[in-house]
Image: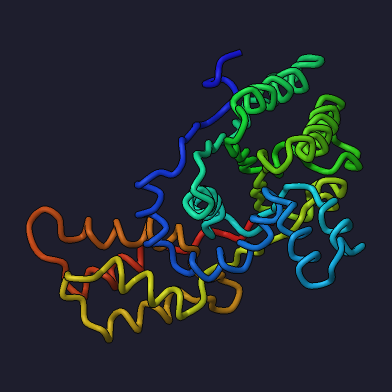
Length: 295
């Protein structure tokens, strides 16, 4: 099987384009700071031993417990809340911080195959073997399992197909194997529906980072960034922040709703004949509604 069959993309890190993307992600620095210690300890377990010896004179039991964690981090939240972009930029930032070459492998949902006996298991094994073979002696590799709810749905569901259960078993085995590589191989798992993931996967996670739809402050930051230099009045931006929030049964706009749907629609109102006007923002809001919450 070829890499194109097993992965959506493979990115060599550090990557300058991802560094620029991180600068535009609202709240990226704060979120990365929350999980940076966990990521560092996942890829270098000896850091804890050094800490314990320095402060306590020996390797204390808590170090052993924490060191037993799997190098797996779960990113959970609704569609369009920035999980995938964060995962890419976090892997890139980590590569920059540790000053090591790294590779990001985004596992394709095509590894599920077409339901033939043993197909999914064979593809998942092939994908992880390919990642393992690329490690070398000092390189760090990160596997991004995006849309994980389509791959590792709980095996307890009555409607779960036998091949789906086998695929989940195989991924769990691969997660177990991550610890064999001395911190040089870790996994980031992104899901829209945390409650549908198999419990064995969640138990193995070193941490779960929750992604919510943007707050009013975050919506203000996004709109201010994306509409900068266009002459849109501050009063209209303020009104748009309020209108893109939750109202009754209608959810607030996701980051994706704003950046990939609303902002382009504002531009389309004026292009190619004139400058953008305040009324274009209002008109776009009437046309673009927030995406429904994933249930």
